[in-house]
Amino acid sequence: MTDLTLRHATLDDLDQLAPLFDAYRRFYEQPGDVARASAFLHERMERGESTILVAEEQGQLLGFCQLYPTWCSVAASRVLILSDLFVDPQARRGGIGRALMRAARDVGRQAGAARLDLQTAHTNTKAQALYESEGWALEEVYRTYSLAPDGGA
Image: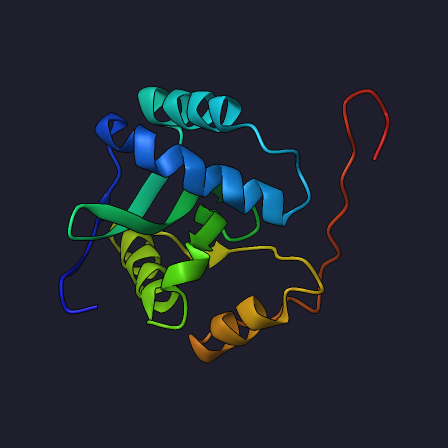
């Protein structure tokens, strides 16, 4: 990991980034669709709706994280949602996920965010261990609910 570079993704990264994003979505039991992944990322980048950080080594993208800005009315402040974090399975256990999380924290600090939030599957214990080792605290006060606009869950 000596040549690892962390940087903001650009549209030029889509050919490498989309398959990583597709693998991330498949991890969460979504059907594989690289074209859909690419279109989704392209739209977020073009509209400036998210910040995507990538980990690159020798011209190869090995992982990414995606942050979405929002606001917290209670704190009357900006909050960033770390929505996506993924490292290529072949590159895991080398500190890339940790480096991306630290870079995300730096982005939050630079944006003046009150905090960063994230969600993960209850069964994703490896990720939970990483988050907790980086100082993230499990939310135990609030519950999260979801509702699809058509009334489904």
